[in-house]
Length: 152
Image (cartoon, rainbow, N blue to C red; front, side, top):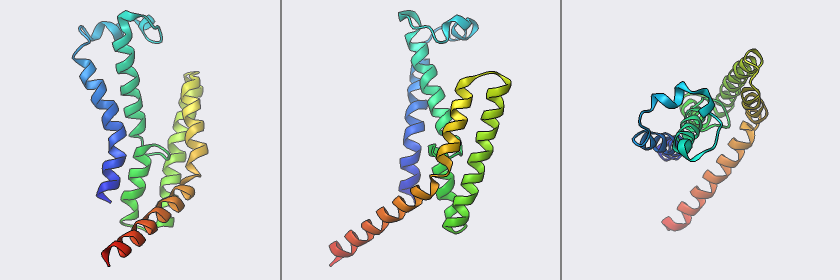
């Protein structure tokens, strides 16, 4: 399980690490956030800001405890240690759907289609937790078979 957590942490940590390194090159940082026209505009002067903003957003989004994000898979692996696979799957699916509802409501209130798209992504993929468990158990069985063959 520790290798699974390390694998799941790699994506968000890479994004957050890139965002942290880019912070060194953004000086003064506050000026980029104070000007709303900087967000979404592509020109050479704010390329680093855009790159950092994208990596920060992806890293934080990936940490959400909702399936199919890495945070949801980590939550699933953590809960599986305490409960059965079926109960863990239900808990992760309910958590994912609750987070999707929050994103959906925020998307409607703030009239932000990006939040609506994230909610839709989570809602559609939350039900695929079953597929994830099937693939995961198949892979683990294959590793066990290889270990038993190589142990002889």
